[in-house]
Image (cartoon, rainbow, N blue to C red; front, side, top):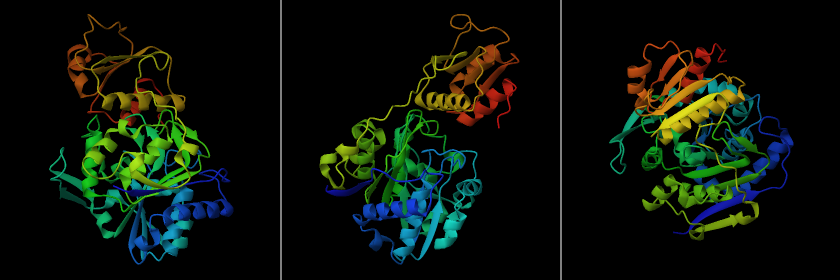
Length: 407
């Protein structure tokens, strides 16, 4: 397989994701066009209805971060679609659980740029769900997909360049998670998440993937990570697996170590070996960095938080660590002793040393027997339901038990 991937890079770009001027936008628009030209962009979108799908998991206009797709890239891509003769332009994503599309649109705050190109925001969570047969997949016989995406002829996938404590990386394939309705998201959010994403790839294979690496994200990503400022790099391909392979390499990650890339390659979606990719633009070796990896375990991560694990899986482990990281960044973690049990069949007689007035959190469905048999009547004991629980549920319960305002 000989698949093209374009890599464009500038040593310096003025502005930040949240503060930029017209000159910065012009520079990024030229860089984006340079990247997309290699992929036959104009022919792809001319006279077509185009859906741009960025990563909008948690926009934060008050903090310049690399969590979401850079607004400058979204603006540049909308303008380029208009200039190439796209018939209509939509921008849509379903952000993280608990955040509606309309709230996300308000946080994004790009109304004037939408009006400039006559684009509109697409509300995935208000669209009728279409359950599509999934004969090639392994986990579900049918998958729910927002009907509205089928109103568009071209699907432009615009993920962020970042690491991810659950899946290793978050790039083009992972960005398809934004198509999954909220009620269906935690059903396969363990080690099977990689397989789940490839199953969705059978239903929605992007026409073009543009990875935004103007600012990237390392460390406790996907949300609590550290921005890699001014990485100033864009990656584009008509093949999402090839784009992810190059994106992983740029972060110092072996693409073959990422299950979703490996599965997608094995099932014929694209190459996971740089030697099988026709790279245009800057040599990736020149700009490659070894990003700081996320730490998944929560054991002894924060003073006063005693995490005891008995066979917990990656779903609960990543959910819990993400929740603790969020609490820490918000300045809400207390150093008073608190115990979190994760996994199956904890025994208070044999394993645990817990004072009667210590808060206890039994995390996830595997912990239900421990909770009901040993802590059901303890006032400060809380069971977090889910497989896994959503990290914001623990965030809220922790604040409630400790008398902290969660907002």
